[in-house]
Length: 282
Image (cartoon, rainbow, N blue to C red; front, side):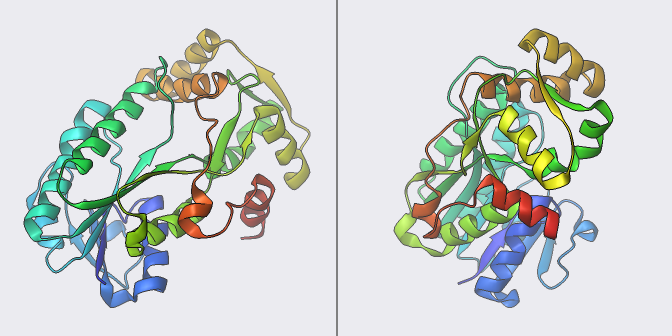
């Protein structure tokens, strides 16, 4: 089986590529990237391809059985057409199956919903493509929170508007395992899967930081309006709105979902404690 993974210069694409090499062998794994020189996995063939143009993907997908489409990072209104370029290239190249990295999220009214909605549209485009498919919906990565630890320590607290809402977290490594399983196991075709671990509150998350990194952080809950202003001041209007919207959805328990991870992988998703332990020991 030969597979192609898009955006292998990114952190999720790179993690999936590493796992795919272990599963299929490096000769059976190809990657695409807008800037191939940034790719950290030189063992595989990497093709130059930009989500804004179909031709690069059409070239990359020749002789490929299954494509793993990593969701783009552009503005939500641009992503839909960009993803269609990949889907159409896969169809024209004779690819049999497409797997998509979507995102979790119940319908809401936050400033993050435009991103959720664009992912849902791509899901529909894939379902209507005529290709075999499997769709994963990613939980929130734990890594960005951990990598932000120095800032939390500087402030002495974790501050956002999530309140007592729960969020189902995951990690890029756990997702990589799941996506390789979706690529190779046709018995999982035709469905959408929530790829998440256990759901925890921000107070519980703060407790994990204190336990595993010997910090003394506290959790401060802001209103959604207060947190939106804070984030836009720090990260600008667009990114600030995206981040604030994520935590508003957590507040409303829109990221608190039943996990399908065990059905996909054959074991339960790692606990948050295990994710923290893995990160600290790697």
